[in-house]
Image (tube, rainbow over all chains, first blue to last red; front, side, top):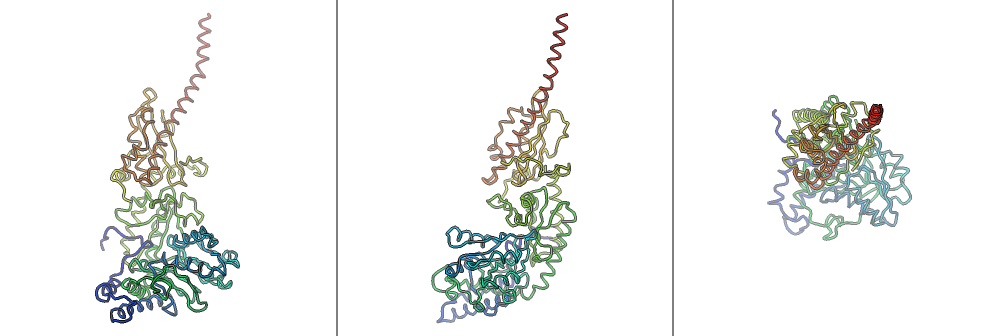
Length: 409
Length: 150
């Protein structure tokens, strides 16, 4: 099969909408356009029916007993904000301490920082090991009498490392602390079960599982324990008061359908993607000296691969590839900040290697031919850039780069 | 971020990539930036010892496309220039020519630093060489004095 360009291999940022999802959504824009809160006519009932069916589909995907435990939000970011700020406000008489980790998404870190700045919470940021794993003992030590929330992501969006959520939530539970997980990257990709995993709050989003952008959900446990939450958006009292605002029914329907498809194909899809991912990984690591895998080699999302290439800079690699392939450098040189990825840095690699990381995100529609093409092109580009790299030259001459007094700007 | 055509051109077809051998006469080397900052440039000049003209220049750069383009352009511009002229090249000229966005201005600053640092290195080496020559001079002068007194 001929490869079509450009190739999209950045599925940790977003995914295309599955045509089956779109098909399910369309009637809810044009014919079944009612407000799900309209109780007195068939348009409202129809919309409500679609929305509630979607809630059931999503509940099944994450093992929630009761669909009512799901609150629609505008996405993963809002779900994280609602979980963290909503808990801090609701449980302020019990305490004000949050435990989270250094490799969380900004949607968790930034609400925590804001709460700290406002004097509303104290936050402990747990470190991770070289593979990105959080130590349950470190969590145990971090929890105090004032701790009201532990927030640890299920799987990391840059390196794919999957946390031992069951163990971590057990530690929180032992101390009677609520456990939130940002599962935006994991839901739909690997089995997630809020009951088995002991999760009290879980954030997820549609657009990473072949659903539409603009909708996410927060799972809020209703039994054992019943989690209470202060709303962040006030208004008509939708979503049982947890999140006011008219639910975008078409998007919810898409989210539900996307969840249903994920549940059906997950086992097969995970096996197929991880097989292709491993092939890409082997191809690159075996052809490029001093290239390093970031993240846990086994406990990792099936579709995610992150590699650092010593002596070359990530953005320059992407520039050599971006005519044909859409990828992301963990290095935020591509954004307005010039800081390298804080996730890769948290693994303890030097800032120079953090500047050199490339993330490959495979997805449902990725083909073997695409993977092979991307692997070969990466190898070519890295070799070309190394010919141009003064660091590679010095290293080959046997100079220890750390021995040089660098003149930073 | 979209790159300007000129940045893409220099990235795809970098001019003057490489290194001179260490014993090249008239060599000046500038190594600026830091791996931690994501940019390191090595820029070398080969100066004609008699005329003070930069006869050749080469670079190697670790950094983003804009950093590579800035150093590539810098080598192109300083070739054939006298040291003083080359030393006057400013980062804003590079940034303007390559149409660099604000977040990439530091790449052009680094290229300017690399040129200045290479020139400085050349001058230091030349002074060291002259010091060596002037070490010889007194003896030569003494010999001349001796012969004159005869």
